[in-house]
Length: 352
Image 1: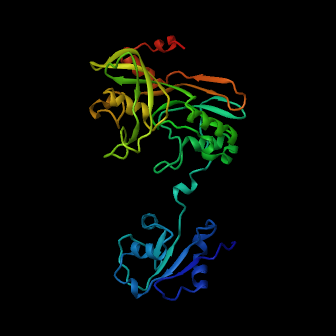
Image 2 (image 1 turned 135 degrees about the vertical axis):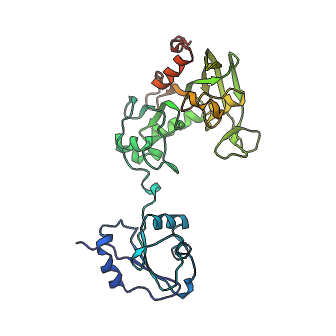
Image 3 (image 1 turned 45 degrees about the vertical axis):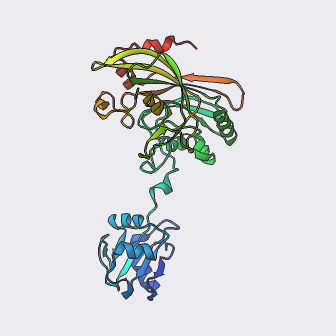
């Protein structure tokens, strides 16, 4: 069996370390092939640690790892004390031999290709346009370090590994469906970002909201984090608020369980987090199915916010031509409109 990188031996509270041959030979069977940079750590505790909790001691001795990370390793069985599985809250006596097998954090492997069925609407050498389904997270983040659109894009086009954020220039919420553009080169990404900043990218959405908004209007309401709920965004007058503008038009009306609903077309000038959801809610017309900004007792009607990125228009970053794409409603949204008594054909008759 090939020899791995020798285990890292750390002095614990100024005590003598375990002899290298004792540690390395005993570990061969369990650390063979261990990832470079995550080699095992061997500690010999001293009397100074007596009476302390194991996780606290270890977070002091190996400060390069957080205490919560060490606790996760203990709970997963990657830490032993005198050859036996450790327990997070165990109290040490001060003469134990501790073995830590560091594990890669989920985020360490976030930017990895994953096979995924992507609905590619358009693709050339510079860009691709994808129809994102509801439920798919766009970019890896806490709680979603894999299975994201970014992972699927890296599998579909490995060259995207050389483009920041795998070419993603704008996002859709997890439970929002519809069109997104992805840049396949750095030059294309730079151009698309500039178009977004100049507000020349045309993004139109279809939304089903509770109530009867006026026929058309513009919401010009700067947005910032909600002052009490950091998960939410809100229309705000704070210094941290960023400009946000949404144009809307009512297309049709219907009803769900006797409550009025309206099918809206919303066009973004800006692209703030949760912009349409926050802006419509600020007028008193929350999106059907919106668990974050709507009313909980109305959630059973739809398991997600009824929001579809319907049309996308932009100037092609290499040809300079104006391009536009449109997708139909996903099945769940179409069925929701039918249930509300709204004819989806009204979408096809909209003025350009």
